Image (cartoon, rainbow, N blue to C red; front, side, top):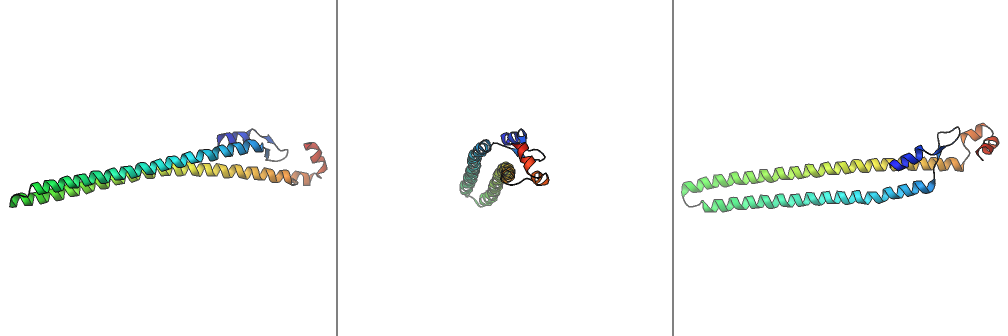
Length: 165
């Protein structure tokens, strides 16, 4: 995008106009390069989503392992009446802790993915905006090249056309 901006900044100005002449082929090549960069951004977004899914799966596995350990601990403590009551309380606490840990891990994973997707969205919005601006400038320039400019109408057209040649 910076190259497009530089190409436009350095382009030859049209007399009595804010328009510039740009090389069509150079602009198209730069736009084509920008299009090829976008798939890489999409790949990165897919990796972020994949990382999130893997993180979520790990959180589930960790949570299940904690719950399973809690159940084993509970079964082991079921020998006496007082021990059973204490085991039930401990198992419930472990389950609550496991659920809380799983919830926190999930929230952290979601926050991480959300931040990465927000960065990606900003990059895509900026790229889209720059492309729209460049396309608009190219279209305006082409329209001016095809038609009579306001300066030609004002000065009789012939003198101005001779100056351009």
